[in-house]
Image (cartoon, rainbow, N blue to C red):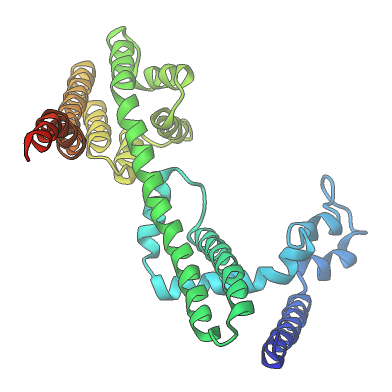
Length: 314
């Protein structure tokens, strides 16, 4: 290994050490409010049990790794937010995917995915530098590209999670709507029917209906709760279902007929999508037939004749 490469490695190690020391000093300087106040109020009479100072500070310093690298990761997450933007879109997709996280927590996950990609690329680039020390700048560009790819890959994964959850909701919707229609037709109120369906079903749509039921039980009107479900739902069918239930409850229209009709619409849409998927697969199936089976068939048909002609030709 050349002296130049040794100098680069030693410089990077020294710089990383100084960066870790400075980040730790910055984290120590920010003393939590509980640490400053609790020593002076522990002797005062309290109603209930006093939370110990160690328990209050344990959440912020869960591990030494989080204490050292936490501020750096949070700063990187804020930088990613400034570069990419679109906090409203990310928040909307988190709600549609059923992920109970804030936008800042999602940005931290993106930084973590980017760091994983950066570490993998750094290992490969380090192995390449052992053979060719002059390719340091292209290796750094590859590492930065791997970091950006990891960040964008987490973004694409969120979109895939949204589509997967919406597909599960569409699969559950006809059964949920039919159960609600049967309960309402049996004489139960919409809230009682909703309670019965939520207690006897499990899935993504039943989880959303459980949130609606919780809002109704806390005093929210049924129509407003279903209107809120329609506002946060990403699927037009679910939004139309929620709006139909809200209108039926407010105006007294027959709810069972509305639910039966919506369940039939969803089944028809699923059948139509299945037929379209079958048509697309039929075209894809022609590729191996044309490029694999047909050439082999032609070769089996014409090869004996070609061999016979070569044998009889002088």
